[in-house]
Image 1 (tube, rainbow, N blue to C red):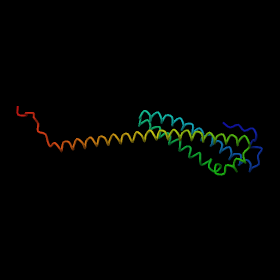
Image 2: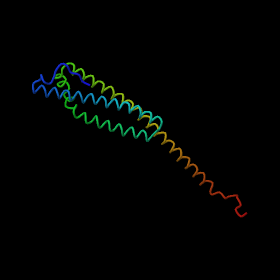
Image 3: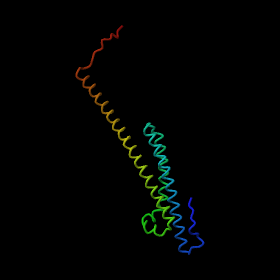
Image 4: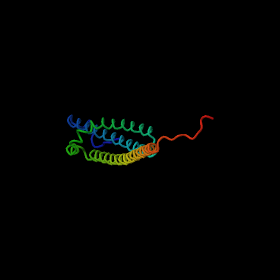
Length: 166
């Protein structure tokens, strides 16, 4: 939660009031976005467990949940984007405590995003390796079938020595 003791809205001019509330809105969106990224980081940990244990259905559930959190982040980004696009100008208009808070939130967002991206990259490598292994197994099975067919073709049909007349 934000605590601002340096300015109160009733002491501001109309122009400053709108800038103040816009700043509060952006910082609030940044705080909510950090919470979303924290949830994504926890979901990435859960995803890793499901990837390691080959729990496909549980993995799909985690991915669906992650998509919902990403949708929340996208909605928050619409509030943050104008400030982010002109961050130096925006940050100069903030008081020192608000600027420090905003920059700390952005730094935490970057850290969490790097953590999530790294975990996702590792999981993707595990899944790719698993896919390659399955492909190799399929190719071995195909090769084995081809060898069996060639062998059968080379030695012709076998006559049974079993007497079925009895």
